[in-house]
Length: 296
Length: 288
Ligand SMILES: Nc1ncnc2c1ncn2[C@@H]1O[C@H](COP(=O)(O)OP(=O)(O)OP(=O)(O)O)[C@@H](O)[C@H]1O
Ligand SMILES: [Mg+2]
View 1 (cartoon, rainbow over the protein chains, first blue to last red):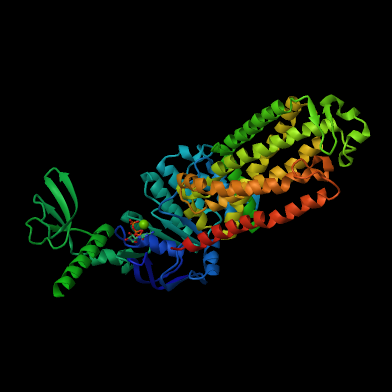
View 2: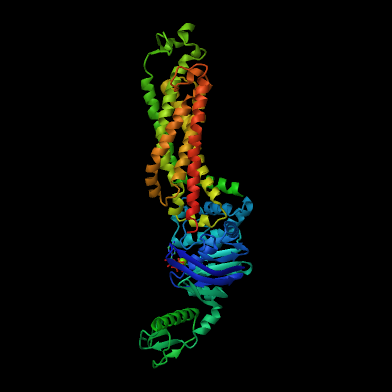
């Protein structure tokens, strides 16, 4: 159980990365969405015990991250995949994972060996496990990062954009792996690939400007966009609408747009996806902010 | 768990230092400096006649040293093989001179240990491990020390052989004592200072620049160590106190012990101070 109360983080006394985040996260998959700079990484780094909050509190399975003891407690049950991952270039995958496993406290050699073999297979790197990590491609490095995060069977898994750079097959495989693991542990996942969340998370938060602007089930976010998603044929929608996609079809271009497109002839309402829900939420917030600015 | 973590870190640090060639380069520099100064010692040892210390001594040929009449030898020098003793002087100058070069090499090639974690972006991962600040620093220092120890063993064997070839027979006990009680402690001191004092830099390049600032401090401390430790030959025989600037007598042992006692606080203190600095820096920047 993770309890976050009124958490703020200010970098260098001027950059307000988090502005009062309050969240309760249980076991299962929890998705974090939000534009660049929303504060997702900042929040995850605080939860991982890497960053001290400026104010507010966060308690993870009873460990308060404001204290050194609490942070060490969190780290003992944590698997973490940073957004900017680096590996030791001169070690091979087996050595690197062995090293990380011992640091995590997997001390029994047989158990460690078994875990590493299993993980290497799960991320499909058994062919190259003996090669130095500097010879790996970006996605392969990412997969080692994933394997590393899963070492020691952590109760809390924090993965920051884990699927960026993975090929579609690996992405789907990893998603399924996470869902399998989510039964009895807490997994916090941030991503820009909305589909990853719609396919795996039952709970999500959308952040913007250091605040949580939506919290709930993906289905509800989709529900909010109902009636606001349109397919417009033949005519490009104007700036009032957010263009999600445009597809060249046999009868002309089909534009998928979020907003109110009823005034376009030939516009038909479409079934929203999570991505549409996200776009609608963002457009709604922007409109709200413009309104607030005008009133001042 | 902590001891296990520290030893594992040390082990992988050594492995990586070897693979990125730092240890190999250091090893070559160690051997080269020993070879260089051993050769110089050979040249300066080529005099055929010396004057033993003490009043009223007369010049004697090296080959004749062991056949000199008893009263031609100062009292405190009696009872050693003077031929071995004479060549052991060359051992001493070789190892002392080489130590200065090795000290410089150590500072330049061990400083990257901590900064590389940041440069490689692995630090974020390590910081998320249940690894205390103390364990992290200890693992790094022990890793560097382990590497230095390994190449020192090879360098010691090399010096034993090359000095035998270039100088002829010398007192092996003296060489062993110098390596154990003189070279090794100062080599480890230099390594420890280099790792800790550059620990706040974030790249290899930064560490190298920082090392240029750290270098004079380390060399000064190594020089202090040389001055205070180089008389340790007295523990074998007073005649082996090559570097205490008096004609040794019964008090020579006390003089040497006194010098070591005087310098120890400074040498150990510098190590502890740099540990505290590194620890404090880690603590300060953590969580920003
Ligand atoms: N170390 C830092 N020092 C100063 N400002 C920072 C630092 N790290 C992040 N920020 C700022 O904090 C804000 C939130 O950054 P954060 O990395 O948490 O965003 P994010 O949601 O993870 O973005 P992205 O989707 O691009 O990864 C941004 O405005 C960023 O510029
Ligand atoms: Mg981020």
